[in-house]
Length: 114
Image (tube, rainbow, N blue to C red; front, top):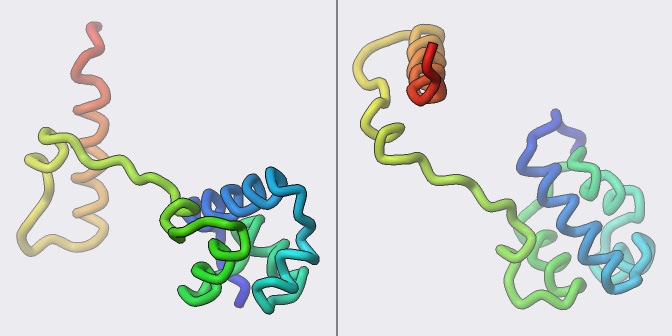
């Protein structure tokens, strides 16, 4: 189940590795508790492998957590300005991305004086 790098999977994997290390648990021990191979645990911790929901729940339980959300990365909520400056209507995906980049740059530079 190899996948392209996605920062959410990397953050999830880092949280697993950190918690596992806090518990002084090896990847092999976690893999036995969860029913995955040690290589799968290593790939999950590196953000290189998709994680099925039931495996994520099993990992959280094996790490002594009551909620899988304790392992999920926090995502920043858009500001009021960012929500107000969204693109809608019939535009191509490329045009949409370009407009979003322009908006993001304008917001980022709003406080910069030349």
